[in-house]
Image 1 (cartoon, rainbow, N blue to C red):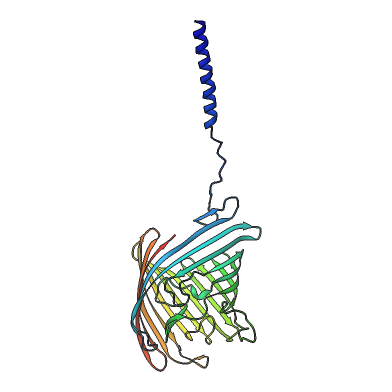
Image 2 (image 1 turned 180 degrees about the horizontal axis):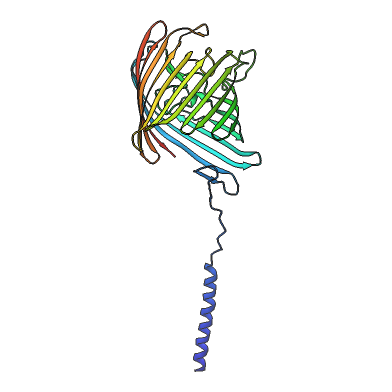
Length: 355
């Protein structure tokens, strides 16, 4: 019995040692603590804290496919046809609080497969930094803030070559804004054609500077603004105003502009007025019929001298599902350049996924 007990005890001891060694071999290291991404709700939806910082970041953008169509246009010789374009855009915004107010920055990259101006490469869209009410960088001015439909053209008109921009809407600029909620005002200095290189007296581009300001008031369901801008190169000014008001099942929008002569802010017509009524048919579907008139569109020796144009059309928007929308528009425009006249049909169908 003693020998048996000794053998059993030895086996138990060996098993205990082996088990201890095996257990030691498979023990995993303690996991290191991780810092999870936190939601930042101080600046609206979509922001999150960059780990290890107090800076809030937001990444957004869209993918758009569009088919444009038009009839011919005798004044420019443009033929009827269609074109397709796919666009991708990514915007990154960063914000954090400082003792001087909110420090913000925005970087926007855009590319098109069929862009007649920029080509297919990615290029820098609206990109700026801002501290409190002071903003510096490349951003849009007032004439890019149009009504939601596609008939009233705040940034241009039906020129002899088609439908184009009037003035420079995207420039390197400096802006200061005072915002009191229902009332805001800003002043801005613009460097027109800021991608054209050095501004020198020899090149004749030293005066491509403009100043402008906007006053905006909100009164219940009514918003009214007034714009004034002066181009030092052309020594001409532009004035504009937009009124929007919630009426019945939709929103009425009226846009008007006056220019003392062709300038960097508005150069298509001496004056224009347009109106649209955006009707919300359902939660997903809305339509916006509109009309616009331009007077004195012909330019002779740097001054407006005769001609007019008018345009009518309708735009429809439909929300297919969350973050996926479609837009369609069709417009008819009649142009008289002071010598001859022509008309055109144009429109597009767009599908856009935003994120």
